[in-house]
Amino acid sequence: MNITQDNMKVVEIMSRLSIDRASRALSKILRTGAMISLSRVYIADLSETTAKMNDDLREMTGVMVNFKGNVGCKLLFMLPVTGSFILTDLFLRQPAGTTKEYNEFTESVVQELGNILASHISNALVSDFDAILVPQPPQVHNDYAGVMFSNLVLEQGMTDDKLLLLETQFEICKTELECYLFLVPEMTSFGKLLDNLGVNV
Amino acid sequence: MRKILVVDDAKVIRMVIKRILTRHGFLVAGEAGNGREALEKYKELRPDAVTMDIVMPEMDGIQGLKEIIAFDKQAKVIMVSAIDQRDSLTDAIRNGATDYVVKPFEDDRMVSALKNIFGEA
Image (tube, rainbow over all chains, first blue to last red):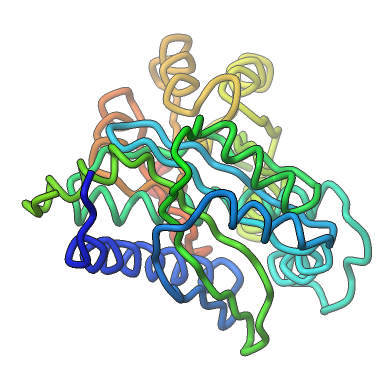
């Protein structure tokens, strides 16, 4: 598939609208100024991205969501384990610093945040772009970024060395919380979305 | 006191819903983490209403709803999901759901959905 600059512009707009919706939902559930913003959408080199992830040696917690429908897609959201403590306190309306270790509540919060993010991204793609996209139950993992990213790649069955990546920034109460949000559509699905919009690929 | 069964695979969401309902005078009689457990708990507890998530492992909320309605045609089931899509909503209503609450929700939305069921709104 030949992806032109114009195609990428359309994908960027679709992604921005989806991420905006997810961001509003996240703000509402955390009852704070939480914001996910899209930094850029680009076709990344798989081996370079894997190497970058392998360089991040922090212990991470991540949630992976598979989507069913006519658009094959996977979402991986991960952040350092210490970041998940902050989210847990916000979610459970506890004073900051209450959560000091990873436990069943932290896992459940990350699981639900994955569900909220995935659902609202799919809601936007369904209502605005005529996709059929239903999230499946989220799976929570604790590991290094490189390991979780490799699992994402393996599960997506990627044979190509290129993947579409959405790079995001995540801020809570104006404090940047480092995280990775990968939304990886199958390249054929990407074409379907553009078709729905009447964009030639 | 009205007995409610809360079904969601996320423990923290069950906690949040329980906290809201208890504060508004409902009794959370039981909790379940998927559709299959929900049916078992429904048979055991015979709650006045159920709040049911949709995306869950093992058995999803739509299947759980179908099985509960097959067991008890009068069952009152409110779907509670972050999926805000027409197909999902019509699927739920067609299969007997009484209402559909989108996550994240305001406390009042959940309470009014339950009060509507019991004609107490």
